[in-house]
Amino acid sequence: MKSRIKYWINPRHWSRLSGNDIDLLDLKQHIFFSQLCVVGCLFTIIQVVDDFYTLNWTLIPIDIVAIAIWPFGWWLNERGRHLLAKCIMIAFMNTLFFVMCGLLSPSIRFDMMYFPLIMLTFIVLGNKERLVAIGFSLASIAFLTILAVTDQRPFGDIIIMAPNKYQEVLNIVTVAVFMGASAVFILDLHGRAGKILHQQKDELTKANEELDRFVYSASHDMRSPLISIQGLVNVATLEGEMSPSSKEYFELIRNRAQKLDDLIKDITNYSRNSRLGVEIKEVNLQEIVEEAIEKIRFLENTKSIVVNRSVIGQPKVATDGGRLSILINNLLTNAIKYHDLTKPSPFVDVIFENSETELGLTIRDNGRGIEVKHHDKIFNMFYRASKNSEGSGLGLYIVKEMVEKLNGTIEWKSTYGQGTEFKIRIPHSPE
Ligand code: ADP
Image 1 (cartoon, rainbow, N blue to C red):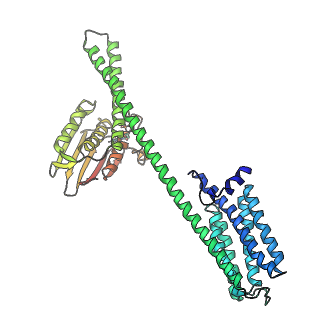
Image 2 (image 1 turned 90 degrees about the horizontal axis):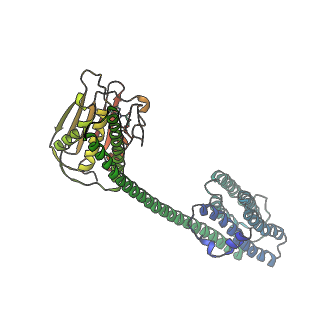
Image 3 (image 1 turned 60 degrees about the vertical axis):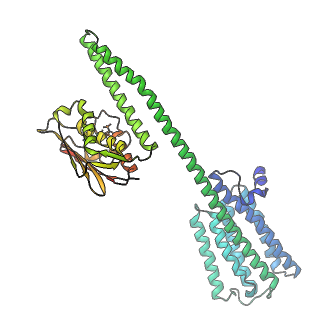
């Protein structure tokens, strides 16, 4: 409690809070309400001075209650009963203004007070209590309507304060001060929220960059010992006679090392894609297809599958050749890996279509297809759509990320038991 008093009493906190924590924005609303109670109390005292000066005995008891209600609202708010404090104050002010308008001369224009009240109601209650604020504002509008309909004489023709220029000016100043304070508060909050957002965006970008750098260098460092293991296994299997079981063990080691290498390559590809920008250079589509087919030559299924390739349109194209190679490689590897060799004539079609506006890549197979229940998840990170899948589940995720980076689109269809087709379109100016 003591520290809270110290906190809001410090003028530095009247218009701004130190620190840029998002939680401070909520706190600031409550502090603003406490500050309003103090300012409101001061303005009421100034109003009351005039009533005492003119010895207006009807208004003096109302004034005393009005002066007392501000510290009460402040006290409740400072004790953490924010909503209760705000509701009591808003309800009281709505009623007080109505009574005052009914008792004072209409020329004093006390009904103007409702406008800052409506504005402040929305500000102090904030987004979470928007419905409560709407309720109070409707009440204010109802009071204003009654005053308009009755020519500000809802209690009949009782006027306890005649036209008074000093009061009128004081009302105008009060309205201006509270409207101005509301505007400053909103602008300050807006600026503060923008700053917080900026700061968080910067922190997030930095964290992402660090993570990318870490992933890249860790996978890079992991690859060198792995390549040594693969080399040593090759040397060991070539050297002299060995028992069938040792041969089997070495084959298993080679197999596992290859899987780990594939995973590291996937992670590196993913990291490179998110780190590096699009790099356009002239490539030959025919060469890219042949290189991709060369890479899948060692896969187990390849020799039983016919790979048809065609390039429609100009084979030379300016595009991001590095990403294009990874795209074709991932899709072609899947088409081979998930084929169904029991089919009478297993095939994979690889078609490039180079038109005036875009580059199309279609990879179609008559393999095992993908079950409908997996269709909305196959592009998810680490998602595998079948029990027999031996990959990392990163291949299609990388495809999706790369196509996004190239501003392209992916269409695909798959019928379980019949085959799968992926069609990628990349615009000629992908940046
Ligand atoms: P993985 O590393 O498992 O191959 P991918 O992200 O490349 O991961 O693919 C996700 C899943 O989609 C695979 O596990 C596989 O079940 C399925 N899949 C992808 N391409 C094909 C395809 N051409 N035919 C059948 N299933 C496929």
